[in-house]
Length: 239
Length: 112
Image 1 (cartoon, chains in turn orange, blue):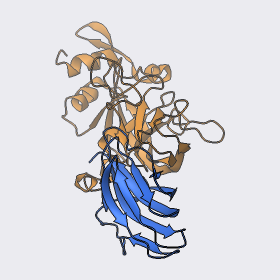
Image 2 (tube, each protein chain N blue to C red):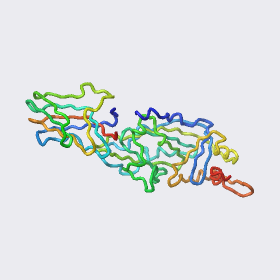
Image 3 (cartoon, rainbow over the protein chains, first blue to last red):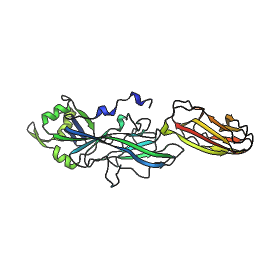
Image 4 (cartoon, each protein chain N blue to C red):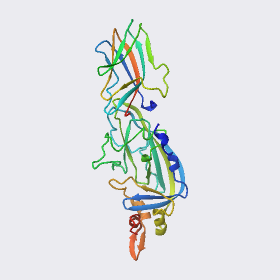
């Protein structure tokens, strides 16, 4: 709590109608305009009723509802989800995979290990009642989702380890006009940039359904080009 | 300052020497901040409880008669200071002088 008072509220970071969002995938950038939004949440999501001393969950948790639907995956292509989360136990260490099975938040050359001192968010960093750490922010599209692990570093069993996911669901339109996309990527239009999942080892691959819609054919300088590949050149100053 | 969600209870029936551990061993890279202790003397007479942490005396709690209680602090607050602090690898041990004494502590383990 002491440190958290210095943080910006995550509620100031929700996008609004008309805002522009650029998502970096491994194959390139996808630019969208937010059309509408609706808030939701999952509170509490109980990761463990009792997390034994010095142990982690038996398996990565995809954050499922009673019918095994993933809370962090939009239920339809027409939605983008935007999340922040906090955890109720100050000392519990929450590790993160995004996409599922891809460890995130490593620091050195070796893979980040559950239970280690690297690459986690605990309840002191992102308290259950907020304000949430900026490290807990993620966007998801259909077919991309996250997984969580929890580790109890203490010598006593931790009862009721629970997450509070605060969610904003957006509808959007995909922008494919190259001049508009270039203006957005280069900051000539106010926009929000987000690297999908992270950089190590690389951003998430774009789902095929989204690539079909967003990766349109261009002709640049008389040569055929794909929009997403071209966006990488734009960001590298080569286009 | 205790974080309510991070508090743990530990209870023990402290006996005469060699005594009884109260709570677990403090995990590596952590310190244990004990914010509250309550005792109830189950022995029908005077009974002192000496608290130690790995051989070092921490406190002595006096009970004059059976049924006596020690409750510290008198008025626990959210911003109370801890009454005892243990370091990593240490464990609180209670040794009573005459007979059993019930002890309950409230603590938080933290990297501070």
